[in-house]
Length: 155
Image (cartoon, rainbow, N blue to C red; front, side, top):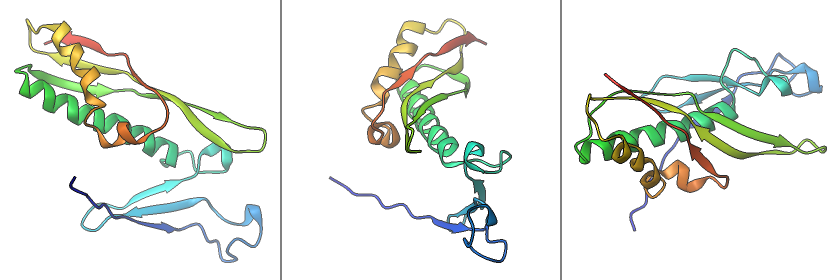
């Protein structure tokens, strides 16, 4: 089996001058720095004191899951001769928090809207979703169920 390595640098940017001296004395901001790529500024979940204008780890996990699914869908559709003209997803991640503050994702629902060529066999197009979990690194790595509720348009 082949192995793959991925790297990124995570750098905290929230030191206001006194470090983590007090709980409210620092920002929950950070950056993802991947060599040769744009820097992504991030924060904590706003419920935990983060900046609501920046992506948080939960956003990034959900976006990664959705993006991986989309890329495999496009590949498998192309291989099957199914023409996709547009693909957009509005995924939903459902989490839970315990009284002690720990939390986890309990499920995700991918909700892509996919525009297909006129006359596409929509049953065959929809069946592709069931095959993706055999391929997508992200979907194969999470420990919660991932559902797909796709909508199809012709255009």
